[in-house]
Length: 281
Image (tube, rainbow, N blue to C red; front, top):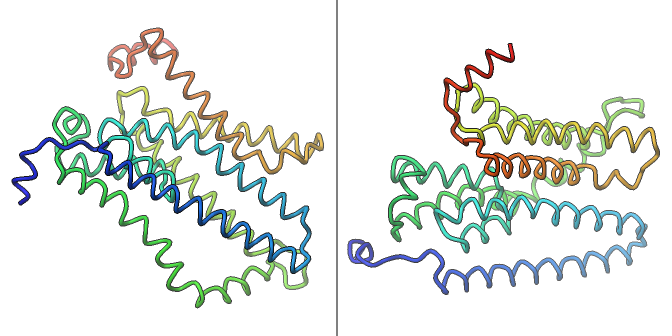
């Protein structure tokens, strides 16, 4: 059966896969609308501050729309290997740009030796299913654990969130601190990946894009923090992180554009690089 399937040409952008993508989008949108309506009704019943509710909604929308630009770039990145529909499904639900591209590259390397060799070949149904499985199954474990064990650890999380670092009060909330630590750890993970690529002596210019984006985003966050605390731009508080991400991606996009426009090689000659470094030193 498998050998029979391999004999036929396979199209990763077949109407069936697009139909599955449409079904996923409809389900996710319907579920989102259902829960936001239920949540608003419950908030009104509890007489919660609607100003805070609107701020939460605004922040959530911002963190959904602006990163979608990066997700769109990720879809374009993966089109050459597995088509449009599968990356769109993965990245539009619970996918992560860094995770999906890393998993797709790892699976392609295992199948053909490298992503370049994989792209030069012909994708088979087995290859497509392998990449789809590697991209999908591991990331499902997070929601699955929450679905099964949430009721058990929710009381402990609530108790931990109510505590502060000072027993007499006035300290830092432990729940907020844990969130910040996890967020910083994620950023440091991306930074470590970019530094590893640089340390490996990669000759690809685009290997430095992650590092450039992190540095630009950090500088933007510093400027935004000054504007919020020194200039009183409180409205910027909810948008500082997504704006930093957007500016960093724009800077990298401009660098990438001019590298092609002006003929900068994406794989610079090592001797030329050494000569430039020597001249700068």
